[in-house]
View 1 (tube, rainbow, N blue to C red):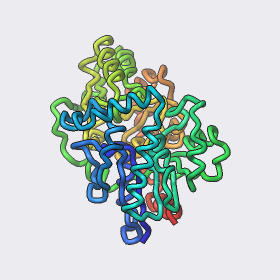
View 2: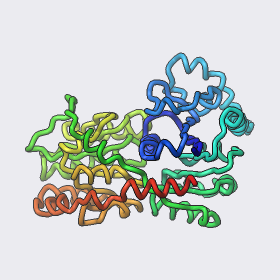
View 3: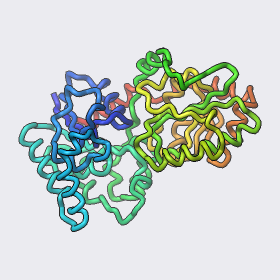
View 4: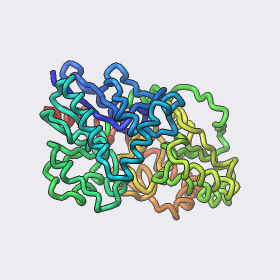
Length: 390
C-alpha cells in the first residue's frame, strides 16, 4: 500500500479541496493510504475528510491565516505571529522559510510517505520543495501567468525539485511551459474528476431559499463561484441593464461566497445600485449544494477573464444547462462554441444573452446538443492518476 500525502493551502471548502475529495473518492482505498496536510486551518469550515486531515501546525497556520477572518480567540493566539510577520516582511527576515522547514521536519519525523503532492501552486509548492520524501509532485490549479503575472517572480529552482508537474487543462499546461520551457518534460495534464451520480442526486434536492423566486415567465441566469476580481461579477449589472431594454423578465442569480474579495464585492453592489438592477441581479451567497438551482435555470454564464479548469461547465452539461462564457483560453477545451454553448467577448455578452432569449430554435439547438457522455470519464482520469503515483 502506497502512502500518499496531499498538501493543500487551507482546510476551507473550495475548488482545490473539492477536486481532492473527488480523487480520494475514486482511488482504490486498498492501494493507497492517503493523508492531507493543510498549511492553514479555517475554524468551522474544515474539509469533509477530517479523519485523514493531519493535526494543525499552529505556527504555520498563524503565519498563513487571513487574520481578520479568524474567530476572536484565534486572533489573540495569532497576534504575536501577525506582528512578527510584518517585521519579517519589512526587514527581509526568512521567517516563512524557517516555518516551512520546521513544519516539514516535524512531518517527516512523524510520518513515512512514499509520495508528497503539492496540490496547489504558490506557497504550497514552496513548502513541499523542502521535503526529503522520495517522490514529489506539483499540481497546478490556475493559469500560472494570471496568478503570477510578475515575470521577475521565478520559481524554476523550486519546480526543478519536483518529479512531475501536473496541470488541470491543456491551456494552463501550455501557459506554465511558456514560462518555464526547461521543465516541459516533467509536465502532464490531468483533468479534474466529476462525481456525476452525486451531482445528479444533489440536483434533486428542494430549494429552500426565500431569495430565489423562480417562475416560468422569468429567464433565469446563474453565475457560480466566489465573488472575486477574476470572475468579473461586477460587470454583470451593466450587462443586465442592456439586456433589460428588450427583456424585463431576466433574473441573474450569483451563487458564491461574498467574503473572499471585499473590493470586488463592494464594486458589484455599487454597480447593482448604479444600473438600477437590484430586482434583477440577486446575490445568493455561498451554497453547499448549488445543483438544484441549475435545474431551475435557463443559462449558466461565466464572466471570468481566466479559469484553469472550468469544471462548472461540465457540471452544467451533466444537468443539461446551456452555457455562455467569456473567451478565456481553457473555455475552448470545455465548450464546443456554437454547438453546446457560446463563447464570446464580455462586450458582446448582452447581444448573445438576448439571442438566447429571443431565438427559441437556437436555444433549443444548443440545449439538445449538450452531450454529458463526451466529458472525459473518471475511469480514464483515475488511470492517469494511478500511473502518476506508481
